[in-house]
Length: 238
Image (cartoon, rainbow, N blue to C red; front, top):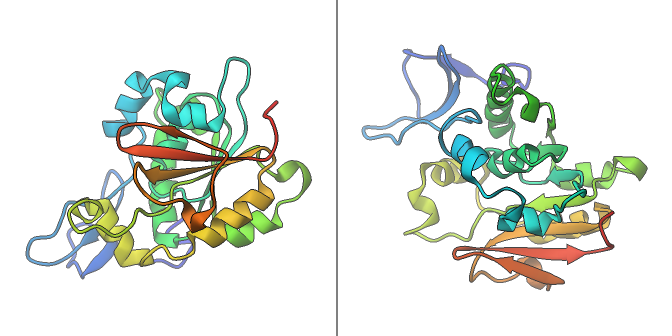
């Protein structure tokens, strides 16, 4: 995808500039230059955090699954409107959901595509990856284009957390995301588009004490120690 989107990809070992996509023998990475650069950012659905959540994440009893509406005999279609590195989308696909990942940044979409390709070749994750599809697009425009049966039952949003020097910016992924896409200033507009498009509900992931996106009060929320899922209900899932 990176080359098809016209992105410049640097082979590993060549001189590194401030921010670049690097193709190693194993994967596509986003790297930052400088005297003490952070480690690379890449998508890995086979090992690391994704593997741990796949094996020990709590199944349909975890807060994310409850917010989406997963129940015995009920597995809705989901559109992840802010795909990022795809971790929550992978959890939902692991639980059986058909998930469309929409990412507006071509760079992050390229990392996602690479991670999906590699996980699709691994026997432990290949079946899960078959339930995940990637779209690189401005999400608001994409949502407004969906009609009829193309509309998902549930739309999931995980907007970039508010700027806090000692929390979000500590994580290398968040630091580099801000370098690429800047501050997230259109979450309220995206939520409005999601509420128009979703058949049954919209779920918004927030820090536990954060304000509601766009001051739009949800129908209910599901809380965990550090995270809150605001649920905007349009109709019952079936």
